[in-house]
Each structure stands twice: as structure tokens, then as C-alpha cells.
Amino acid sequence: MKAVLTQNLSKTYTGSKNAVDHIEFSLEQGEVFGFLGPNGAGKTTTIKLLCGMLAPSEGSCRVFDLDPAQNPEKLHQLSGVITEHAQMYDHLTGLENLVFYGTLFGVNAAECEKRANVLLERLGLVDAQDRKLAAYSTGMRQRLSLARAMIHSPRILFLDEPTSGLDPESAQNVNSLIRELSVDGTTIFLCTHQLRYAQEICTTYGLIDEGTLLATGNIQRLRAMVFSGVVVHVKASRMPDGLVYQKTGEHTYDITVNSEDEIPPIVKGIVEAGGNIYHISTHRMSLEEIYFSLIDRRKAGKEGENDE
Image 1 (tube, rainbow, N blue to C red):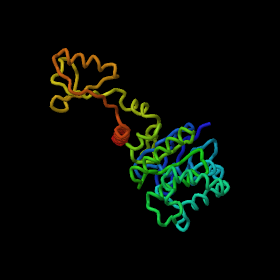
Image 2: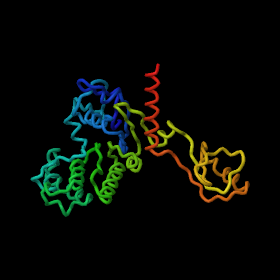
Image 3: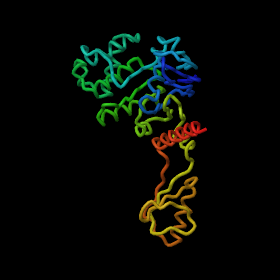
Image 4: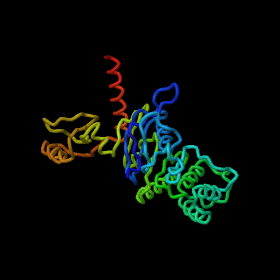
């Protein structure tokens, strides 16, 4: 059973273009899926469709074989959601908020308090658990929101910018928790426009722009869609004749190869030509570079269609 499955999924708001335009992808249980794109790309609309807050205009989606639009109550029992702006009760303490939300999911109060204590400890909120939420900082609210989303041990977590507003130590704690949950089988659906952050924590990705899903897969698959080779950075006193390279600075060069197996002969050739090597390293396309390459490719395709 897939954790998430979408088929031809679309959402059109009245009087506007498709916010989500016929997207298809699937997720296995335990994946940390980064759903990436700029503001307005369709990320939030997709989450609302997957959580049953919106009904599709076309196509379908299923979460653990449940249709969100037809079974929102059952879906909410096995999912947790946090948004960039956490909404909880200011007049309740941190602990009271967690116990309250846990009981809404059918967990008894004693078990809620037990789970809450573990989460508060894990997220560095023990000292603030008896304070009213009104006294919490933005970062503390964000961490409590994550604890609230996890209080009923969901099978899938929908996270919208989960480290927004957090200091580096708190963000590291949240990231560690996300990895641990994934290892334990929880599926993470993480929306962000921070591509470098996503590359650090996610195992698979979906790249979306203007409602169109550009690509899905792990980093190796995405790289292969754009450029399958490796760029070798070299700093050497001289380069051998016949070697194809691009000079990038004084005694620095970039060489494109198909695989790392080609690097030893390059090194040998430089040395045999009398060159001294001061630095050599490889560079593979980052997620950010892949994303903008796909965006540029899509724009070029649209311009080509307009010219016809």
C-alpha cells in the first residue's frame, strides 16, 4: 500500500488557472518527501487536497488507501499537520494544549500526558510546559505545534516549513526527530522553498512550479534528468595537450567526465605532462541547480510553443 498516491490530480479555483495541474506521484511508507517550489507553486493546495480540506477538480488522491475527500475523519486519525503559523490555545499551557489535542484524537488523558512529556523533552520545551502559550516565542510555538501534530502517533506528517523561526539548535533537534520518525516508518511530507535544507533532510523530492510537477524522485534520478556527468575541479601548474577542459581562473580548470572512473587517467596525464596538482575535487549538481535547470527548460519550452 502506498503512503500517498495521486493520479491526474488537479484543482482549479473559480475564475483562476489550475493551482494544481494534473500531477501524479506516489510515496512509499517511511519516505521523507520534499515538496519543493516557490510561493504560489501549488504546495499548500496539494496538502489541502491530501488532507481532505479541498476536493479535487479532476483526478484523485489517496493516503494509505483512503480518499481524503470521502473519509476526512479517518484520514485525520492517521495524519498530523503543522503549518508555518501554528494555531493553538493561548490561554492553555504547553502541556495542556498537547493533552487537549491528544484527547480529540481519542487518546486517553493519562496516555496523552505520558506522550506529551516525551515530546516536550525531545523538543526542548520541558521548562516551558507549564507556561501559557501566550508567553511562547514564535520558535517555541513552532516546536509545540510539531509536538501537537505527533501526539497521536500519526502514520504520516504533513509539515509546512517546520524549521521556520527556529534557532539553529532547535532546528537541528527538529531535523533529528524527523529522521528518527522516518526510520520508525512514519512518512514525512515536507513543504519548503528552501532547497538546500531539503537536500540535507529529504530522501525523495517533488519539484513543482505554477501547479505543474516538474519531476519526482531521489537526487540521483533528478540529476540524471538534467545532467548525468560529473564536473572535476582541478588546480594544476599545467594541463596536458589534448585534454578537453574549461579554464575558470589562474591554473584552475573544470573537466566534464561521464563517471569518476575517468579521474585517475586525468591525474596521470597531468603528472606525466610535468604538471603539479594542488587540488582536485568533484562536483555533482545540487538540488538547487537541478530545480532552476528544470525551470529554465520549462520556460524555454513554453517560449517555443508561443513562437509557433
